[in-house]
Image (cartoon, rainbow, N blue to C red):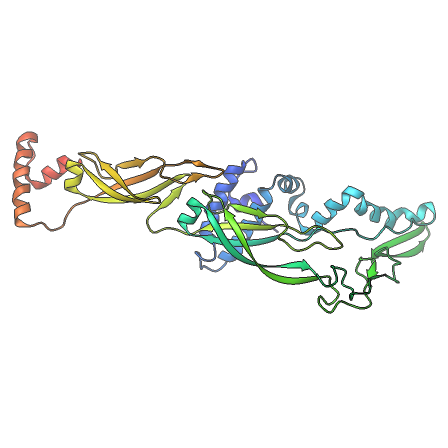
Length: 374
């Protein structure tokens, strides 16, 4: 039995879009095949993607909530589209009830234009590429309409002919007599596969398919502030449609690589910065690395270990509003030397003596403990 999509993402059925996105990003980082090499991680990653694709789309989520996985499967999707012209229902009623009223209805007109399939492309970004955005060149492979035959599949100078088996309807019917009346069974024409037409002389470029698999390069614009799980839609770059139908879309899923210096929480950037115990005691103005380059960080006198200092507006641009940025939060780590020179020790002993007179605590440990709260 298929797992519940909400359980896969670890959220409640009332989860809002932001909660779904946070859960997806967390799990995508954990189970991405490039990060997690454990057995079963790739399958888990595919499950996570499928669940998020469904629940992040309001219409798909509504159908899933009402009908379960059957409501969002490819077969159900096709049936759902057919409801618009009652095609799905027409077949059912014709199959079971047409004989009761006498003769069966005439065949449905053959299928019209069909939209092409959507495609997915996973794109890895470096940390700073995700922060500032830019352009990335990718190579995709998709179906394009054959230019030689204009998508008809027929050899230039010829054209498809109406199927002789179904007479162009795309369906074949078989009537069965029963004591209750005549039943008509409707099925897809096996000769033309429901197309309603056949190609006698096939195009030598596409082999009669009307489409060719083509590899091409695309320039993708990456907005500033994207993160793992962000999905970009490129219109009409999916597979070509059939019988004059529109092409599908290309969906680019972004995955941001970890950085050796910075971490990210929402729109804020986090890092650590080591200073000496003397700099912590006396204070200092020190250069620190940020995604914007080197900036000056003010260390207040008496800074304690674990203190978080903030560089405002040096975080991640907010997606959709690049002029607004988060902050850079810097956790201070104070280094205590394991070895000191004789001169340094003498000075520290003098300071410890002064500290002992002021606090009643003796020794270097007492001095350092008084400074750093240990």
